[in-house]
Length: 218
Image 1: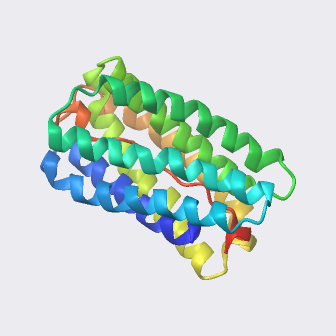
Image 2 (image 1 turned 90 degrees about the vertical axis):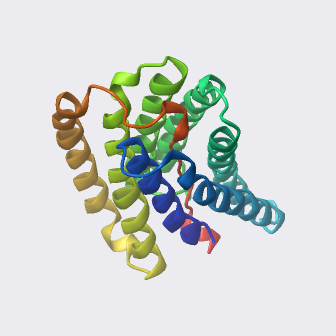
């Protein structure tokens, strides 16, 4: 179930990123955030109830709530025209959690893998950008944040989701994680001076997201 959710996490990241780049009207992305947010709340609830006390499964499911609440928070903010500051501080909290999940994927026995260690670290970077953009009101990084979100939607959501769903992730995880780390460092450093200079959409209209995927969850 977590693998299916990852595919739609990619969709939300891509759509929210496109919106921040100014290519989609802000409120038009709210329905996708509601749908995926609901999925990311229902899924971990089911996984926890069926975990039979398996600590790794419960730990993996706990990450989904962070992101499910993120998407729902985004949708409510959009539809109710709320100030983005509260959401921004929440995304900062999630960024810290994402760093912890990255470490767990690298070092906790029987939990995740190094490929998702890199993916979680990239999500932490994205959530940190949203913290700076929304909580600290640094609008100059709006377009850059949108480009990062859209790119991560494809490379940390769509691609690994299909590899997982087709049973091909395990043999590609290490090289994909390595390639992803190199790509992100090079491309995101190059993009920053190019895209820095403001958002084409209100900063409160987007948010990062991710989902913990533990292949043992089925």
